[in-house]
Length: 455
Image (cartoon, rainbow, N blue to C red; front, side, top):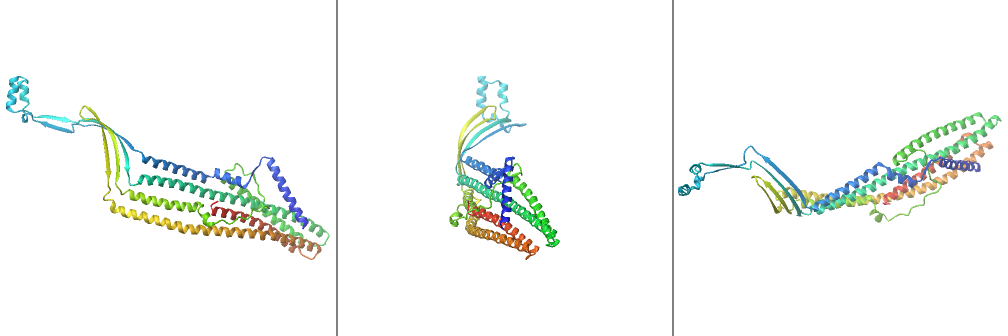
């Protein structure tokens, strides 16, 4: 027993020394929090979620501009092959014979000109021209669509922020799972190294015994077969660790896969205190998103109602035109009232539809709230179970270690077979691996519970 503990202690000291040598040679060392922080800053999913917030902010600013007047400028010019307005004037209809005689006697007009007045005169106007205007209209009443539209844009921004929190939770969860997977494999690799050293020690003892004719060569072959199996496990573990390091580096934006994870599996995280799930529910992004959905459907219902109410706007403008060879400009004030009369036929059904959608969102909030609380309780039960499983795994190591010590003594005393000794060695290795699995499972359960209660 003391020898086994000594071997494990030596391997642990060797791993620490190796880690210190690696640090001295420029390898990066990352704690779990540093890995998570790197994932938050470098993961593409979170960068896109942040861009969604930026887009929602721009949409909110766009909605705010609806409070201000709309200003439009219009220019118009034309030329035609003939005047758009034509008028025939017959002066004989206006000049009586008496007037014509008086004009002739006075000599104001020549006789030829006076005679031409009896013929119709044709006039054309607006053959070409230009026109321009600048008009500003200020909405006075729009059925609440502008106010509610701004509120809805603010809700959209809040939703984007909550979705960012969900994305952060998912990214942190994935990064931490990769982290603990690497830790698990590295711990199992340490166990394999310890077993490899132990088997070498057994091999040495059995080799001496075979040469002395105390035991059969079959015992040595069994040890060598187990050593081959351990070597195969070592190759598989090293390959999986290498792949997972690449995955973690890519996911978190690390510059190199040649890094060291700073952890101590012997230090157990303290058991969390159970939170008030009803109170914790209010802090979860899932619940808040459901609340925002209710708020959004309420505002959409109001906007639908407002779209079928009269709209009122006032404004003014400046107009210039040159239609008849002379320019003219003038200002004007105006007011518009628009009443959608026939739209109420289909609009009443649209309003009812929005009201139904709002009630659906309220029902979904109530139903999913219960599901979220169930998930919290389930996550808490998993934490308790994982903690107990870890305690069982720790006790199993002590029992498997004692069993290995006894079987080795029995074998050396000739009262046990090599198969029994190797079986005891395998049970000891499995106990160490189960403790590692239980530790990693406990860490993952803690993370699941913290996220379930909105931490």
